[in-house]
Length: 348
Ligand SMILES: CC(C)(COP(=O)(O)OP(=O)(O)OC[C@H]1O[C@@H](n2cnc3c(N)ncnc32)[C@H](O)[C@@H]1OP(=O)(O)O)[C@@H](O)C(=O)NCCC(=O)NCCS
Image 1 (cartoon, rainbow, N blue to C red):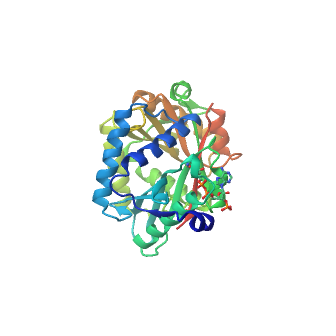
Image 2 (image 1 turned 90 degrees about the vertical axis):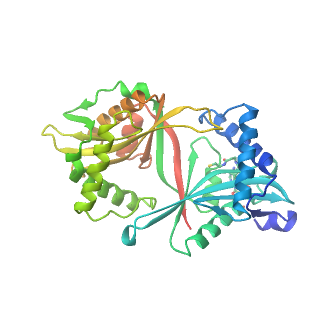
Image 3 (image 1 turned 180 degrees about the vertical axis):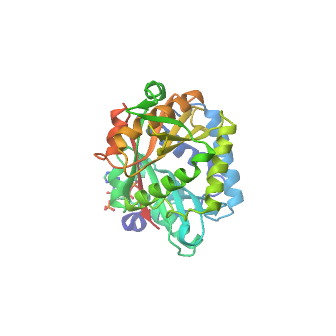
C-alpha cells in the first residue's frame, strides 16, 4: 500500500457519477476471470453492461460521496483519478445482546490486471474495514469473502490477514439426486413443525461447532425457549405449505424416527451480469454428536439435491463444510462433489 500511495498518489474512495462505464468494465474483467476458474457464466451482451453502468451512476448519485448506502458499501481504487479497482461490501446485523452478530460480506473485489501488485487490493480492503468500523462504532464485526478454489487470490488473502473458515464443494445436482435418500437405516425427509425442538438443538450444535472452528459468521447458540421454538416451527410450516418455495429444511432420522441431523436448501436464480442460471445451495449441516457423520450426511445430500433439481437447478453447492480431511468434507467428496470454494474471514 505504501508503495502505491507514494509513487502513484492512488487512493480508495466512493465511486462518483460518470465512472459507471469504467467500473462496469472492471466487473466484466472479474466475471471473465470467474468463468475461466469454472464459475457461473456471465453475459457477453454489451446492453447488459451499459445498463449496469447506468445503474452504477445512479447509485453513485444517491451515495453522494458516502461509502455506505443502506447496507451496501462501494469503494474504488484509483491511480491518479482513474478507477483501477473496486470492492463491494454487504453488511448484516442480526440478534441482540449475546447473540448479536455483525458481518460484512466482501464481494466483487477486482484490481485491473495492469495495476496489480501495487497495493490497491490491500488498500481497498483496509478502506472497507475502516468504513465498517466507523459504521458499527468499533463494535466487533467479521469481514468474509468467498474465493473459488482455482483462483490464485488465496495467497493474496493470506497476506492481508484473512484465514479460511469454511469450504464448499459442487456437483451436477442430478448426479447426487439419484442417490437413495435412505442409507444404512437413516432416512431423509422434509422437516415438519413437530421437528422444531430437534432443529433448535441441532442449530445450536452447528453454531457452537462453526464458532469453535473460527467461523464467526455464525451467532452464538441462542437460548432454546418457547419463542425460539415457535419461530422455528413457523418457518418450517411456511416451507411445507409452499412446496415450490426456494427454501426448504431437511432432516435425517434413524430407524426409530428420531431426528439425528438437518440441513437447509436454497435455490436461487443468478442476477445479471451472470446468465440467469438456477443454482442449488445445501448448507448448515448439523448432526447429533452421538451419530456418525458419514452415515447421516448421504441421505441429506440426496434429498437436498433432489429438491434443487425439482426447483430447476442444474448444479448444487454444498456449503459451510469443515476443512479437507474431516468427516463432513470427505463424505461430500465421496458423493462425487468437487472442491469449489472457501470462505476466508478477518475480524474488522
Ligand atoms: C486478488 C487481487 C484483488 C489482488 O490485488 P493487488 O492489488 O494485486 O494486491 P496487492 O498489491 O494489494 O497485494 C497485497 C499483498 O498480497 C500479495 N499478492 C497479491 N496478489 C498475489 C498473488 N496472486 N499471489 C501471491 N501473493 C499475492 C502481494 O505481494 C502483497 O503482499 P505484501 O503486501 O506482503 O508485499 C487481484 O489480483 C485481482 O483483482 N485478481 C482477480 C480478481 C480476484 O481474484 N478477485 C478476488 C475475488 S475473491
